[in-house]
Figure 1 (cartoon, rainbow, N blue to C red):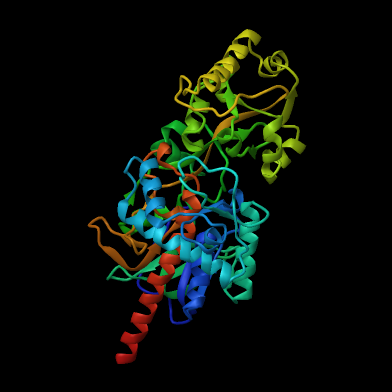
Figure 2 (figure 1 turned 90 degrees about the vertical axis):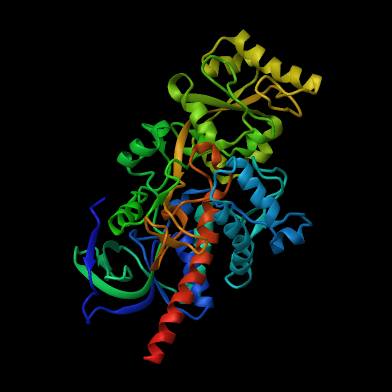
Length: 474
């Protein structure tokens, strides 16, 4: 990442003018652009890659939302208050309360708007509840991938005539004496710099998971861990904020995942753990309650010998596993090892067979007694041979801290006052996971991206309309 450049003043009169510039064409930036279109305001979305993908495309694409039409159609009882309580409970009340309230209120209408007005074909994930959630509220497109969600958003942007400038890297921010952003300097593929002016700016670009120096500084538990996110997450939003005098928040918050298949490099859905799967280390032992959450599981897994463990499921769970494209890809790549007996499973894991047998028998005892096991987990049933095992490690997916923002997604300076026309959301801003790995509730990343994009769009629309009104009076 090159150092940010702050230019004082306004780009020259020859620079084109746009009402709103959006840096980043992920779920956040595209949602904001679509919502601005709905409000009658044009935005230019600027994307560094040739084809927009980012963190959204690498995710499972599952969006948690309460009070949606999809939920009502399926008879699911949920509410924004219930959702907010789940976020607060998972973060142990360390998430910014005002932001939690803003996001849970915004996400349902945003999901409905993307469905009704922009053709995103949401479905409700049923059959299991993700850790920390108290209702069925995960929304996904039929393909159940983040890549398919991105394709849907891009198709919607094209249908709405959203202006998208790809292969364009923002290098300069222009700011005037009042702290207002006046324009951008954008480096094009030939190395040339083009300038544009804007009435308002949204940073929807990235987190810092791909910046080894920042990870080393703020996420010591993830030093040396596999980064399974998009390499465009280089911390540039934080670098811009520092140069502008913006406040930062929750830099210790992040989404890890304790189920990254190695060496295949594929996500193995945590739904399998929630429905009875277990994790076994190289000694043939379980080491945590797998239902607590996949984010903090990344730390637990990395603390095991060699930082590698085995996900173990049985035949009963295979049909569920095969509903997830990531699992099917991992299976096709040879990640799944079948064991007909406990002894065969021990051979795969490389552990002592009696130790592994005792581990699985402890689970069976817990089921028979109807009591939590020694880690506090309650099992409904014990695994039965034959087994399927997948070797996994802990990985860093994306960060949850960044620019401090208010409930309108306005970036705040060190005194807590908003910049006049600068917003941030998604990976560029603080999220609702608090300041540690255990605060991440499943789906918080896309919650922040889509709800934040929708909120920022309203804020940016108000700014543009206010400026236009003021100019009309001059």
